[in-house]
Amino acid sequence: MLVALLKVGVTAVAAWWFTRIVRSVDWPAVWVAMATLSLAAVGALLLVVALRQCLNAGPLTVFVPSLGLRRAVANDLSANLVATVAPPPGDVVLRVAMLRSWGIDSAAGLAGISLNTLTYYVARFGAPLLGVGLAMAVGETATAYVWTAVSSGAVSLAVVAGLVVASRGERPAALAAGWLAARLRRIVRSADPAAWSERAADFVRRVGTVLRRGWLRAMACQVALVLSEALLLLLSLRFAGVPAEVAPPATVIVALLVAYPLTALPFGGVGVLDAAVLAVLGLEQGPWESSAVAGLVVFRVCWLLVPLVTGAITLGWWRRHHATEARPLRAATRAE
Image (cartoon, rainbow, N blue to C red; front, side, top):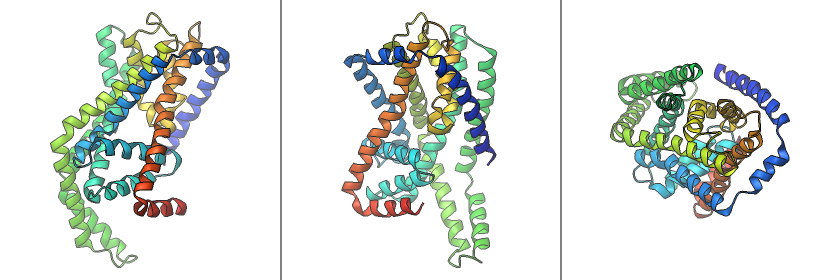
């Protein structure tokens, strides 16, 4: 509840700040800057989007080796669509249903999905540390960067610690599951403490084995994912007309990395993250403001809209080819 209220508060304050910027923008100039994008520029952006989606699905192929990259990308795109338009855990229900339709064990799939999410959170909140390191390398360190990196890095470290504990916590998990089943037995007679304990221990054991085998490759994919998004932002700004003298490559990458934890807000922090990047780049006012806003609009279309469209296509494809698994999913969606 506290986290939800904090998200709402941060979003409201940042949205107010962003509306002040929006009101001063020369929007006709923004549309002109977007309309001048060449086919080559659009093609380059779509190639980076494709790379981003492969990197986004990469950890899932590490944690669920039998899945393969093509199906992992389809699973990720479809779940992203459902997570955007439906309340949780609709995306997890869809992910598991898709994995089962491909003959993958539900427990193995759920373990891989959980680890995929947690390693992404490590990268998401660890990104400011990379940003500070790059800023120091190019001589652009600011106090605000350091504070952001320390606070966000603490969250990333806590997730890492949780992963380490969880991967070795078979006995605590078994005890907790048995205790919960014993309490629920008054309501649900089928709740068997021994069976629940065994399943919990097996799940944690499975998670630990998979994590120890593939955590390095998974984290490499997650870091590369964040850097590919920085490349996408850099290209979007360049194609919109923001020159390197105004926004050097290192500065653009640092701006996104430092602000990256804001992607945890609804819709990837749209508006909020963009305002923060503009502020870090110092382009919220001045002659390059319209071009910078145009670049951010292009970035958001590539970052948010293109994956949603492709997610709708992949979800429709899966439903046509796996109607048996799709029917329970539609029933669960209607029940929600």
